[in-house]
Length: 115
Ligand code: F3S
Ligand code: F3S
Image (cartoon, rainbow, N blue to C red; front, side):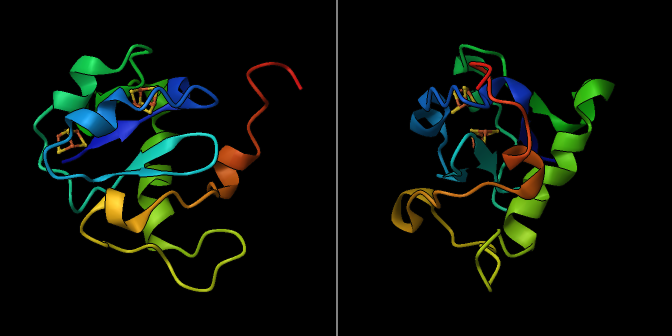
């Protein structure tokens, strides 16, 4: 089980969740953030602070957002566009830094501002 960041983070990236996570397992893409499902300890602290309610437990994710469970995992397990190695489990998002890139699934989503 892990927590998952869904559609409501896209083009918002409030980042309060990053401040709360005790194990620093929330990694930054270009348009949204992603929770490392291997590093997440299921504490729920991130969910409580997100102003857009973008975070859910994977076992409570609504059906309309189920694609985000696989997509969060894909961000770490498969090489991101333009990269040859997957992110994997670096053990800390702050040291790893922002990736500046999203999964193909998120990159293809319509812009929230309509552009
Ligand atoms: Fe996104 Fe909410 Fe975190 S908008 S960056 S999941 S606080
Ligand atoms: Fe981190 Fe706990 Fe959320 S480990 S990703 S704050 S559920």
